[in-house]
Amino acid sequence: RCRRFLLLGLGAKDELTLERFRRYLGDALVECDTLGAADVALPLPQAGCTPFPAREAGVAIAEGVLLGTYRFDLYKSEPRSGRRHLRQVQVAAGDASLREVTDGIGFGETTASATNFARDLVNEPAGDLPPQRMAEIARQVGEESKIGVKVFEPEELRRMGMGGILGVGQGSKNPPRLIQLEYRPEDRPVRRIALIGKGLTFDSGGLSLKTSEGMETMKCDMAGSAAVLAALRVLPELAPRTEVVGLMGMAENMPGGGAMRPGDVVKIMNGKTVEVRNTDAEGRLVLADALSYASTLPDLEEAIDLATLTGACVVALGPMAAGVLGNSRELVDDILSAAAKAGEPMWPLPLYLEYGEHIKSDVADIKNTGIRWGGAITAALFLSEFVRPGLRWAHLDIAGPAFGDKDYSYMKKGGSGVGVRTLIRYLMDLAA
Image (cartoon, rainbow, N blue to C red):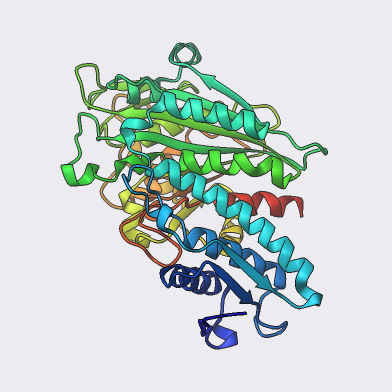
C-alpha cells in the first residue's frame, strides 16, 4: 500500500524522447530518496502512451535510477551513500509488455553499472590512480570478467618504438603503460574492432604548464581509457558477436628535469616523426602510438578512439556534446545512431584534409599543434596519420562531456562515464 504519491508529468507524447524519459525518472527517484522513501513502485505508462518500445522504456528506467542515484563518496569520512533511503524500485507493467520491460531493465542495469564503474575511475584522485594502478585494475577486471589482459611495460614500449607515449611519460616518476584487453565471443565473430582510450592519469601540461585553474579537473584526462575498460568489462555478460580489442595508453604528463621539451622530436611506432611544439598537446602522442599498434593487429576492420583531446571541441559544441570525426561516413553515422539510443549527445565534425597543411613541420614529418582555429579537426587529422590505409576509423573527442561542473538530472558533478553506453550500444547493434 502506497503512503505517498509522486506525480510525474511527461509532457506531450509527440515531444517525449527516451532521453527526456530517462532524465525525468532520474530526477523523480532522487526526489523519492530525498523524501525518505525506501521502496518505490513505478507503474509504466500503458502501451501506446509513449512513442518508444517497452524494452527501451525498461532500459531508460534502469539507467535513470542507477545513474541518477550515483554518488562518489569513497573519500568522505561520513559517506553520503550510507544515508541513502532508497532500497528498491518495483516496476509495474502490463502482461503484454512485461517480458520486454524486464529484458530492457536487465540491459539498462548492465550499461548503468558499467557507466558508474567508469565514473568511479575518473573521480579517483590522480595521486591514487597512476598508470601502474590502472594496469592493476585492468588485470583484476580481466580475472573477474574473463577477458584477456596484457600490460606492456616501459621496456617493451621502447622495444616497440613507442616514442610518443614514452615521451609524454618521461617527466613523471610513474612510468607509462600500454594496456591491451581482448574479448572473444563464443560464436564466430561478425567483426574485429579496436576500442582505444586516451589515459592521461594526470595532465599538468608538462613544461608547457597549465594554469592552476586549468589543472583542477585534469584527473579526468583518462576518461577515454575508463570508458574502454568499463565497456570491455561487461562484454562477456552481454555476449556481442564482435571480437573487441581494447587499448589504453596510460601516462602521466608532468614537468621535471627529464620531461619532454617544446622543440623535441619523437618517433612514433609506425616510423613517423613528430615535432613537439607544445607539451600540453600530449594526448595525441599517446594515441598515435596506440593507433599505430592497432594498425598492426591482424584482421582488424575498425578502430574507434575516445579522448578528452581538445578544448576546441568544447568551444565548438559546448560542454554536453562529444565531437565525432573519422575516415568512414558509415562508421560515424553508426556511432551517432548508437549515441542517440544511449542518450549521449554527439555531433559530427568534418575532417577537412586541407587543414593538414597546418600540422606540417619544418624539422619532422608533422607537428603536434596546428593553428588557433579548427583545433578539433587538426587534432583528428594528426591522429589519422597513424591509421593504416583501409582501416575504418572514428575519433570521439569527449573533452566537453567527460567531467561535469554541476549536477544535471542523472548526470552528476564529476566524471560522467561518457562513451560507455554508446560503445555498448554500437557493439550490440552490430550483432543484431
